[in-house]
Amino acid sequence: MRKLKGILLGWLYWVSARVHPRYGLYLLNRSLPFGKPVLDYLEFHLADHCNLNCAGCLHYAPFADKRFADVEMVRRDFVRLKELFSNIRHIRIMGGEPLLHPDVGEVVKIVRAAFPRSKVRVVTNGVLLNDDADGKTRRLLSILKENNVGIDWTKYPPVENREDKIMALCADTRVNLRITANNSFMARVRPTGGEGIRRAFRWCRERMYCPILDDGRIFTCAPARYAGYYNKVAGTKIHVEKGMDIHKATAKEILYYLMCPTFACAYCDAGARYFPWKGNAKPEDWVR
Image (cartoon, rainbow, N blue to C red; front, side, top):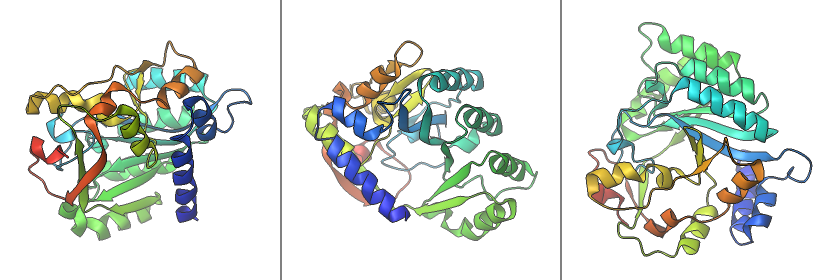
């Protein structure tokens, strides 16, 4: 069933990328004509930085400042999102590495209170999941279980040997665990720009729909928001999007914005160079 849903969603992205944004947003938000619209998907960072150093990370976490989400800002943003949307179908709490945040449990409660019908997942690399010497991990998992929030574990090569422990811990606390093995990344950056923004956007939308929330603003994707971290180490001038202020915009304005290419698309190749997972990330690892 999950495979069938993935195929249907992929088809939806493919179609919506080829029609006018006004029609594309209707496809991705099927309840739009009937009152408050539904946002199909949203992700946000609890931490920009990470405890792995994956070359090619689309969120530029290896170069990110040590920065945690402000819990009260998250609360304010989700109160506003509840005013705008009748539901957000899929919410992913991520980073960087979200489990580095000192108050993951409180954020989980905020998200669930705002959207009781959403499918909410915490996306982690698993480095901190199998260490429960002080009981902190088990307490967090209990909060996830109480709020019907699952874990998406992206299993990279350095943490493959932790599978048995992580599976046992989640099974014991009855937290839904999904495991995705990831042995490769893709390089898509055009440091000097030059890609057609519509072509790049269409290539992207045919495969994914990944708006991201950060401090009261929503962005088309993570690379458009966090490219400044890459610029800092690579000396490039990749366009960093300003996003849309959710506290000033209407729901339809937000949805329309998410269906349109931005200047940042010019720096993202309509294609990709895939390479095996590796650490010790260097700026050139991101270049197409």
